[in-house]
Image 1 (cartoon, rainbow, N blue to C red):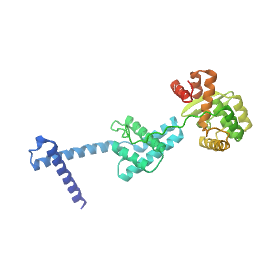
Image 2 (cartoon, rainbow, N blue to C red):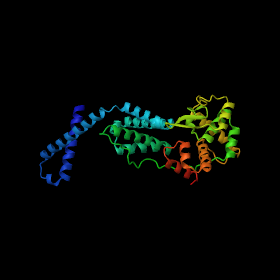
Image 3 (cartoon, rainbow, N blue to C red):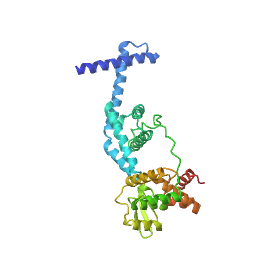
Image 4 (tube, rainbow, N blue to C red):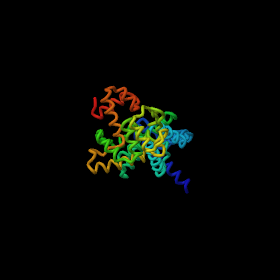
Length: 321
């Protein structure tokens, strides 16, 4: 029965193609029905041959291995939050393809758009969908560079949600930072001092190490180091934290959440103008450092930026020229 159905579909396809040849190729309109069907069978056979060649090439690509290599590489150059989002996005894309009976590596641009639209229709936040699409596109770019027969189906998509304007960057004043320090527990107070006086990202705190007058850590996949502020050393010692690894028992998310809770409380009490994030402490450091040095190259080095143009944009976004 199945063979009969397959033969029927094949025959319908051949007749459909024969009809289109007659309509779209006037020079072939004089051919008889039998000749058109023979020509159509050649077209179908060539199409199946090309599909088979593509399938064989794709079957040779170790998808799972490439996926893990890509995510491992992303974890060395970006935040763990981004890597988790990339993994989640690829997992959802694979589930969508499986539901549609589509091989992931054969995804077309139209199908990539359909997946994006399906995720948007689920009511997910625009930021989440954008990050998932960014991860999928980055993965396909990775595959494209390693396998010449692949092309990134997400390149040029117009289905990606439009980015919402980010909130205006906020810079806590020295008085507000003192309010935060005074209200924080000893560990969080030490973290606040390191971020506001050394310009550290919260992601650099778990790997922070202090030796003598210098600190060093790894943040966003890069080594960063600097001089330990005297107040920071004193606060760390009062908190009973080991200088060699003061925050090694905490994750960046734990410190971020504790800071957010403290900010929410102080903002509700009218002691803070804004609901500051941990990154706003880095903003405060950048403003103070630039105002004291007026040297963008020193600020670039202190912040650990990739190049001075990043620092210039950072300072302008904070209202500085």
